[in-house]
Image (cartoon, rainbow, N blue to C red):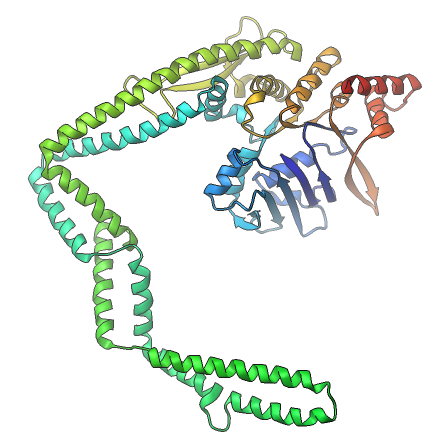
Amino acid sequence: MLEHLLVRDFAIVRNLELEFGPGLTVLTGETGAGKSIVIDALALALGERAEAHVIRTGAARAEVHARFALTSDSEAAAWLQEQNLSDEGECLLRRMVEREKPSKAWINGRPVTVQQLRDLGDRLVDIHGQHEHQSLLKRDQQLALLDAYAGIDEQVDTLAGHYTNWKSLHDRLETLKQESADRDQRLDWLRHQVKELEALKLTVDEIPKLEEEHARLANGTELLQGVQGVAEVLYDAEDSALSALLSKASGQLEALTRFDGKLTEIVALLNEATIQIDEAAARLHQYLDGLDLDPGRLEELDSRLGSVHDLSRKHRVKPEELPALAVRLRVELDDIENYDTNLAKLEDEAKAAAATYDTLADQIGKARVNAAKKLGTAVSARLPELGMRDARFEVALSSLPAGERAPRGRERAEFLVAANPGQPARPLAKVASGGELSRLSLALQVELANLGRIPTLIFDEVDVGVGGRVAEIVGQLLREIGGGRQVFVITHLAQVAALGHQHLQVAKRIKAGETETRIEPLTGSDRVQEIARMIGGVTISPQTLAHAEDMLTRADS
């Protein structure tokens, strides 16, 4: 859940700081007030593309901070843990845009790539409306939504593991079959390569140590002379060593303390500096005593590193990848040397793995078919009350070619809509307008509200082109979702605004010749005034105020 948002020098916002709670938050304001600025700023913090024009005129940079509260079992918390970015349950996002410089991003105070920010953002917030990152248009997300609706997420994850196992066995089996034709030649080659690699006895953590020791020995003369020179300056020079000069200065100054006690602290500092220099000099002498510049050892290192780099070039891998390569080639060599036994074994294992995958994939496929019909019917039933009287929603499933397998199963899902009777259903991206897409999202989210995949939902333009009874139904549905999720909606309809648990008013003001956007939370009479403005426009009558109070009272009842 989004708890806090800080925006600086973004568009026409100079400085904005907001706290948010659970439930439904509505943002209202006159046309042109900048209601979408909050959403745009949040989208930037979630990894949206950064452009220099978002920086407020006259400012050097724009900056957005967002703080989220996470549950320990959320997808976002798991992602942070996987990326080693978790910080005791904290989730702090920061994005900065500077002129003529790449934007910068941080998660929990650590620099990250924009892609990492986007990956995390997709697990925190879903923005529905005319924004780029909305999950409803993504085919993989459509399948994920269907699986969540069907309640088969865990089965699909299990299937992905079965696929990995089958694919590994299948690939090994195919490799073994392909190499049987030139078995003798391949055996000779593998035996030679494995013998060469295993003779090297290289471990992954050995290379940095070898390179460090080699660098020290190869530059031994420079190290020796340099350290001796520094030791000379610090301690060893008879009359000009820093230690002796500091000690002399300290003694001279200490003699003067009898005239002014304020010098005592400075004498103490000089004494501490002398102690530190003496300690550094002692450690340099210890270093020199332990410095082993054995030319024979340098030759050994040259030879070993030369062998390592020769083999890495030969096999076109990085030096640290050689141990893993040796293991892979050893497995392949064992497979071919025991071809008949391994072939039969691999065939049996691959066949068993395929059967395990196919059994679960069939179960998942049947569940998807049932869920697709159920979801299509449920969403279609909600569309008339959302102002899409003749619209029809469908979930189309297509199967992979016979015999093919994929990590998430053998089906692909696509959300389709027919806006008018007699028209074929077509993909959402091709037929749905911004307002229609938002209302379709709303209908879907109502059906999926208890699944809780993404904790915060934002609806932009969800009430475009509706009014009256439909507007009130939209508000009721949004409030219903807000019972279990955090929901934000930008609205120009009083019927929707009155149903919010939290109400934010967006307004422009001119200060010192500059236009700024300000956002204020509304309660009590201020909220009644804003609802009345949305109902009656410029002139607000007592009847309009009474109507606004009635709407708010009914919303809380």
